[in-house]
Length: 145
Image (cartoon, rainbow, N blue to C red):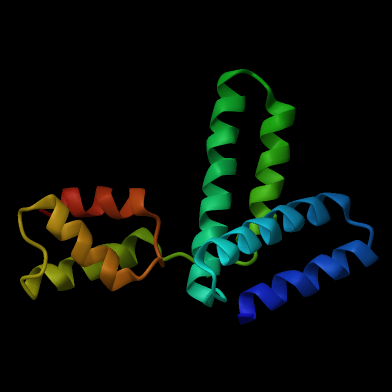
């Protein structure tokens, strides 16, 4: 069991003891997703794989927030946003837009970022290793091609 997974399980136990029902609910869903992926891959997950699961869970909730807002259901949107905050506590801090621009420009001077958007994205994302939002990276790459 990786460090991330252990931390989440310990925090789940602590949230249960502290009687924090919302945090317990979110962490149970996250733990279930981690266990499902562990069963699917038939191996212990690395911290990087757990981080990817957490990002997917946060992204699902963000999509729900957008849908709820369009439907005028602010109470459901704010519930989902609270869940996102719980999940983001376990995610590494994302790079700022300025830091992404620096990486893209560095790769461009090295010749790794070319006019081909797909190849450029692949190079930048492999360099960033999940430290930045893909949508923001795509915007920065488009601006710098």
